[in-house]
Image (tube, rainbow, N blue to C red; front, side, top):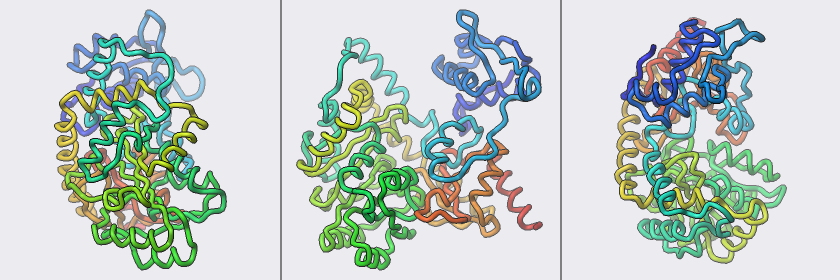
Length: 469
């Protein structure tokens, strides 16, 4: 039987999944063999029952195991398809476009290494806080039926307003609209502010989910080049004059995929340009909790005159807690709330209560400090490993999740990513993040998932192949 390493960068769930997959593949566990019970395996390895439940569920979903009521988990017999014991093979024909990013990235979470993903490892998240919140809700006899409020759970809205006040954004709870993650918040704002055919500015490179959503709505995307020092302001001014857009969706802080941070002088200039060109700025600040520096935001400088502010707790509490928020001037926020009700009624009062409990149970700030410290440490190690292989770094933010890098011999990130899938590695090819997709050698590395020797062996082997060619 395999052993677990609590100090490994791979989460315990992933270690369990990989361990059983190897045993099934090499016939150490034969078809029909029964696995240890969840409680027995958890006790023998000193891990939580929840960890083992998730690992076994993943193995069932991936086709390695079958669950039998009142009997347990068994290695699946594979009489059809691949030879017994071969197990499912990684998908080799993934399409590296926006649709792939939205769909396949979640369907292929079974890949052993995920340096291209957009979330934190399980053991970096605040799952203990969520469990404590869940237990408290049960102890309090929280009502589980009915709908939530149109604007969301009031106690959480008050907490969001108080938190924003600490960052110099003066709002009341009535100006906070809770959403099902930041994705719904951005979607509501886009549907309210844009109509088909409208030109809209976005960061380039930028956020694939957002770009796919805007294209789906019929908007005409115009990329504003990102530089290691923020925006290319000269290019931005030319685009404003040429296209006369009404909205700019942007991520000034710890931007995905580059990790860049817009300096204060550029934020002021952007607000001046917004005023001169009647431009609404939609500030996506979902990585604010990962930033150890108390930086100003567009919303704090503008106080929501021309800025719509979007935030989220999903990155640092848990992706399963789909709780985001949008903050805007009162008239616009009321319209967004109406649109939210028309498209999906209320957001989940239960998950909002869970998030509120996790944020107020006393260990939240300590958790955030731990996440920031771990990310800073990971940035240093991963930057050193990549530069040691000859990679060029776009910048070294030393905070947030991402490094944007390229190697002179690896000129097509999509082709490299196809090769990586065969080795059980999920990369983040640069063309996903471009407004006009084209072959590029840029790759997005999530530093929290990039501390594994197998990744660097793969990259080094690909570099040697290109040098030989």
